[in-house]
Image 1 (tube, helix red, strand yellow):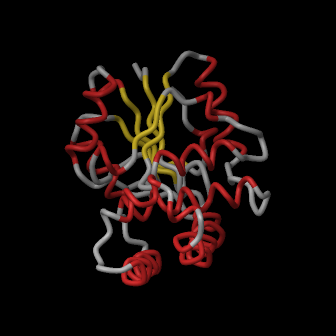
Image 2 (image 1 turned 45 degrees about the vertical axis):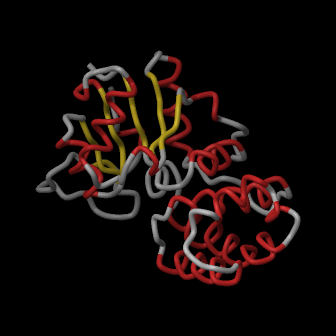
Length: 220
């Protein structure tokens, strides 16, 4: 019996192209101006920068841009990107992309009293932005909580053990949804049930995990 569902974002509830072609370029283009402006002097930004290697602001910003280009899963970068994206959302430069099938099934599961959570490499702050500024409005109320890389790496078994422990339930009662096989391997090794989203690829009947094209194909 599934009592909790934990979902990834990129390639699962939301398109990879939105993250790769909208969010990442926006944070890259605005990073240096953000850090050198009023926002960069805030206590929160200074705390984040203290975790970034480099002896000067220029060194730090150049390194962060390099990490963006490499799609590095670096927690301080993810936190800064969230702050930059907040400005973009608030100014109406873009809306958070959510697949309609994901929105509809998340609503159904929520109404069925299944507890929903998000686990993404993006910061919790960034997660709440993407779900807070969608074409369906603010849908953060559907979720009971969020996890990011501070709970652990997404390809590490211990991360999913930590999540199950934090939820206070047996891992076997948790369903994890992702498009990435490595993440699903780790979650399954921790005892969770898993399903792989194949948004733009053919289903492979010989794959190690059950595969579906969209959320409508998931029954819990």
